[in-house]
Structures are given as C-alpha cells and as structure tokens.
Length: 338
Image 1 (tube, rainbow, N blue to C red):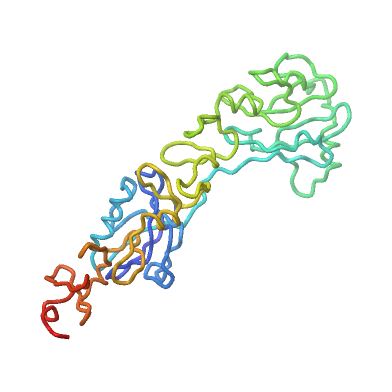
Image 2: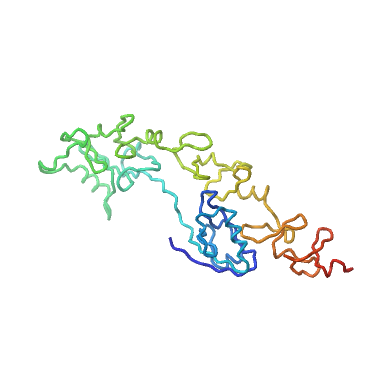
C-alpha cells in the first residue's frame, strides 16, 4: 500500500474530520475536508486512510484515542496516510456468449466462484456442444470460432473424454468444469442434486453447490433480521447486515458505505448526527470537527483559537479570564468601562 506524509503547521483547526477506528471495526480515514483548510492545501484526500499520527500507528487506536492524539500535537501535526483504496469484493457476473440460454443470464454472489478464473462462459449449439466453465478465447475470437471449437470432438482413442463422476466414456454433449469432463446430468449440486448445466455454481472445500444451497449453508446472517444475506453485504460493528437493515436511527435511510456515528448504541448518518448531537463553537458558530482542538468554558464549547477576549481579541486559552453576558474578557478589559 503506497503511503505519503504531510506536515501541517498549527495552530488548529486542521481542516479535516475523521471516521472509523478500532471500535468501529473500520480503518481510520478522512471523512471530510474543509475547503481551503490546512489538510486540503497539503493534498490530503477524502477517504484516505490515516496510518500514523506523529509517528504512532493508528491500527490499534479507537476513534477517541485518535482524536486525543491529534489534539496533543500542539503546533505541528505529522500524518502518514495512504490514498483511498477499493477493498470491497467485486460482484461476479455470468458472461453469456451470444445465443446462450437466457436462464444463464444471472448474477452470482460472493464466496468461491464459477471456475478457476471466476467467470462462466456459455457457447450454444446442437449435440456435441460444450458448456465450458472458463474464459472466452482472447484476441479477436468471435462466436463462430467459439462454437466451432466447442463442437469439435476429441481426436484419437487416448483423448476420448471420461466423465469425472462415473468414469465412463462421454458420447455426445458434455460439460467441462473445474478442469474435469462431466455428463451434463451428472454435474449436480451435492445438496439438492439439481443438475447444474445451466446457471452458476459454487465450489467450497471440494464440493459443488447450486447458488440456493450455497447461500443456505454458507451465507452470513443479518445482525438485525437474522435472515441469510444472499445479496449485497454490509459489514459494520464487527457484524454483517442486509444493506436495507443497517440504517440511520433517525431518518431510516440505508447507510451503505457512507460515514456514520454511534450514539447510545444506535448508528446515525452524518447529517442527522450533526443535527442532533453536533457541537458548535460558541465563538465562530462553526462545527467542532474531529481533530480540532477545543475547550469548554462558560458552559459552551470553543475552538481553542476562538476563545478570545471579546474586546481586544487576546487569546485566553490557559489564562485567567472574566465574563460579562457569557462573553469572555481579559483582566485588562474586565474592569474597564469600554
């Protein structure tokens, strides 16, 4: 994984928001950038993974630990990051050669796939045609050449195909899958015994399954509805979910691959979390983002750079201050008549 390093000069705010962490079972990453902020100017991108904070690995940090580590950086923040990578598994599709049966045009899901290269191609024809699990010929091959090659019977007595299951000579149409020859009626699901000469199949630990039986046996269960997940899977909080079951507790919209936040054990999308639980700075009225240094005073939250004397703008962080009408004042102006 290619990484890069940025050095941000303080003081905060640093201009980015974090998401993830060990407690969310997600890599620590950048969820938002302040336009024109320090992080954006340094070339940090939304979705980039945060690998190190001031030389300390984030692999075992919770979200709060990462925030506190950033707040402790003072006037200089050093981050090591890697560009956003797509680590999600790709859905495998059945590729059908022109003229193939419509029943074969379906989508397969997850796990072990159709063949060694993860695709299934079909060539249609009369008696003697081959239904081959494998890759279409490359480099300008067309349908005619595929069908012709598929219909050619093996030449010579030493090349007569034998069925891998019954070990008998195959006469007429045959199927090639997982590197072996089969009578079409003998290539079946090990559970329901359904013939698999059409559609897809899964191989698991040497056994062959139709998609339905594979899902029943190996598909994960949804943490909310407890039913098997046979389509798109959502991984969150060390559990698996149907996409439509992992939703924002407020607006009920599926969260999918967007950032979310936990509050009292419930997930919230970023918009509703900020609306219901977000903290704004009393001084500038902007949100206090993850990574921003802030303090609590006069019953409010403040960016450390916004907690200043209301008259002379002197920074009051760590200093003695006074207040009038919820406004902080330095000692010089607290007793003046200005």
